[in-house]
Length: 102
Image (tube, rainbow, N blue to C red):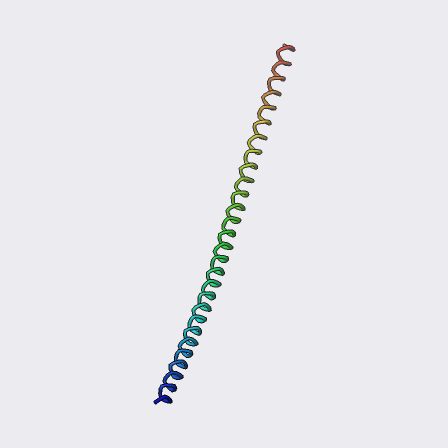
């Protein structure tokens, strides 16, 4: 009877150790899965950030092109204004000379 009790105690201890080992293995699998999921999330976040940065850069380039076109257009308009003013001044000077001659 004592040997049966000892056998049951040893079996219970072995079962307890096996249960602890199984629980530890399951916990390790859970940790590994969480780490893998976290790494995947980090990779997705990096990819999203890179895509957003590319979009921002593309927008900035487009804005720079638009600003350059506006500047060129404004410069062309200003050049035409200066030429028109010079022609008006020239015409006024010619009129003034003609008036003094006549």
